[in-house]
Amino acid sequence: MATGTPDLPSPQIDTSKAHPARVYDWLLGGKDNYPVDEAVGRKLPPEAHDAARQNRAFMNRAAAWLASRGLDQFLDVGTGIPTEPNLHQIVQRAVPTAKIVYTDNDPIVLRHAEALLVSHPEGVTDYIEADVRRPAQILEHAREILDFERPVVLSLIALMHFIPDDEVAHGIVRELRAALPPGSYLVLSHAASDLYPELAEQVTAEYAKGGIRLGFRTRAGVSHFFDGLELVEPGLVTATEWFKQSPAPRPEGSGIYAGVARVP
Figure 1 (cartoon, rainbow, N blue to C red):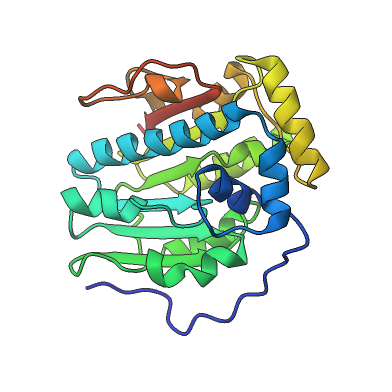
Figure 2: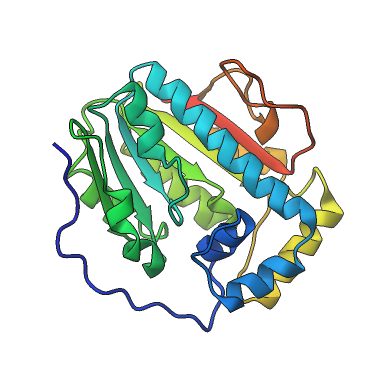
């Protein structure tokens, strides 16, 4: 049965500061952003729009592949503003009984939670407003919905580059991963600092002007998030190179690393 968070409180949205989820929404052509977010987005190079699109397409392909393998529990941290198809829509096409827990720290996402919570009648979706910097809080809530005795897919899509401190970022992922039982998966995408260095510097500088700190990483830095896990072929590649099913995405350059890995 579809369930969700009842009686959601009225969110307090700060429209004076740009927020990553809302800038991302603008880059994807969404309407759920404010002038302060658009101001950041308009200063970004055209490649930033491509990266947002490529990142979203990777998420769609990875979620569909995992669902096709029978994975039916997903914890999506940093979900962002709803953009159809949402993760639960992709997963529940293959597994109608799937359970999905969404997490984000932007109150505007809470405002759209009713859209997120429209699960397939046989499945479950839920939502928690929480910051990835507090993984224990996220896990505590997720355990109310998901069974951590069975495999869970942890989705960290274009999120960890908003945690610029390497020690903090890798510590967060380690804590989240530690809760996953064998047979679980980590799905992660991350902006690269070494594929297009000048573009990476430009994007980082423009976000900083909007009050948003970024920590793009090299391939080695992103690979560290997968330490001890079994990377699924084709391994850690760019977002446009990762696919498991036809049709293959059209070849194009990408400044986003992406990978899927199994917990042994």
